[in-house]
Length: 182
Image 1 (cartoon, rainbow, N blue to C red):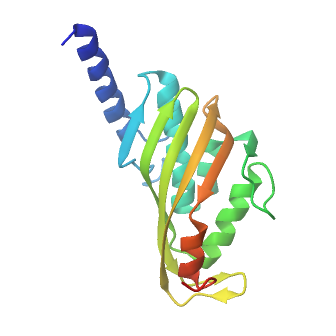
Image 2 (tube, rainbow, N blue to C red):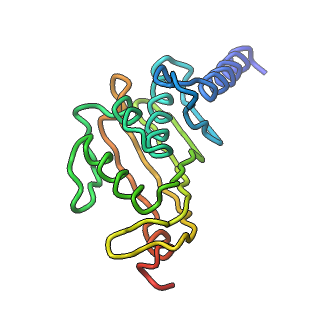
């Protein structure tokens, strides 16, 4: 094998190991950022490391509901490019969505199944799970399991998410909540 291939491969392995184990400066508490089950990056650069950290911070927000993580991850100029009806645009939108969904699923958890970084973009495959014990619109939970997936695409600038495109498996979620009969 050519030496450049070996060096590049070793750089990617070291970056992936370092990125997977990194924690945010915010993690002064015992809490750590979610570690992706699989990670792929296009280059061993400080920019890639910052994008990975940002994606992990945003996943930590969804995993814990701690708004401090969202404030670290989202730019003040954040734009949701797939804004659902009724959700405010900007950083307040995800905060509103998290509060509303946590009222229905207080033990909500989020894991990063896949994280892929290329250029200024991160694609993130998230897995959400918990138990519907609260209230969702006119539905009252009875402890049933909630287990669904989502896909996000972030554009990151200056260590913060400036744009997000997202798609949640709402059909599965609404069936689990009892809003739609299978």
